[in-house]
Image (cartoon, rainbow, N blue to C red):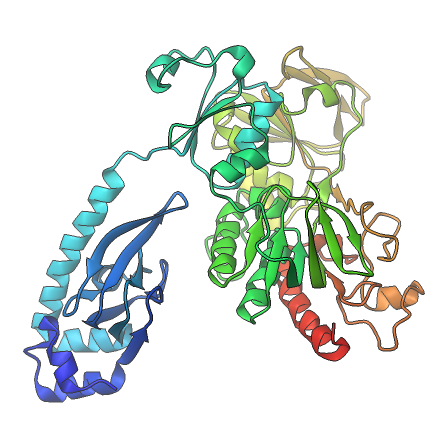
Length: 550
């Protein structure tokens, strides 16, 4: 319990009258922290903190790497910058040893500042000093964690760049013939045969590495720490990450298996405008990054570059590529869907060489001054068109239908109409791709006239819908004709349920195996619904563990 003497020991408060100190003692929180425990996380709500005992470490994450910026000792305060700017905390404060910290919530601080001008003056002076320190940090030139040398049209180079971008690892990319290569690559420059070559920030050089080797070198988790888990979530998109957050927060030993990068297809979205709580919209990778940090902070393990080869539903063993296996008391399928492929002449040999399925945001910078085309008339295509319009000379949406409104949200249609360099070709389809080493042109057929015309193309991005790729699942898990997993009443209607109780809403035909997000048979395919289903799946997993005693 806070006392007047505790608070008076803080220089900022030492001259305040006893009646004010008494009020602070009754309205402020008294935090007793163990070593390693946080008083506030980066991005936390603004408040004023004062260290009464112990030692607090100031930390901030830069490009996925934690840095210590300073320390706060007894008598010092923190939180002046968020209060001055009405912003979240730019860094985190963690106890370096057992510590005691006083927290004054924002409304109480503003009332105190209004009644005690000296406190407000001293806080303002300290905030200006600390903001200056943050400015000096932001002025430091960022150092990429990975430098890549490789040909733009080398598919291996493209895959590595996309892997780094989707895992939010900062990197520089240079072509083997780039004039600045000699100055920016220490030592002997890699030969064409060695490309793509990667240099890590510690000086390690890798030649044509597999993504898992690169992930391990960068400190990303690729191996499970335990032999068994309460719940194993297959897929790290919005549904899987939501399940990870709720599972870990409720004390379940939680493991997420992701074959590429957390975020799923939503992670490649340039802008999600209608997600609750983000009035100005949020990019898919930012939403994924926040969810990933949250899940890890709560104790979930997130494995990347790992795919599931098979599931033994009898033993609950999940067999991973590479021969590893983990046991799961419950399993949550959140594998999402995969972009549907086009059977068009020239496409297969040019994938990654100018033709991409989905929004390859890492390719945006390479489209400056070029004419790019997108196939599709849904929201994903609309969001990508708006994103590429900020880079390319022109963006053309090629749509088979006769109207954008039939498949795209109204707000996207209106935003596209306001972009002078975005065009829409209705009743049209791409019928050919041209180019030797990379895409140079595409053939478009007008469905009304039947006329085929050729157009220069610096990049073609395909958004024609997606399918559930669940052929690897065991036959005991019922699916519909397109591979979507049946759950709840659909399982009963299909005659695939033999358990004594009714299946839970998100439960598959195998008790204890749940499905959520796009992989589940459902007419609703939205990020928000996937997040909701991920959290619901954990609730049903809890009920299963309690009632079935798995």
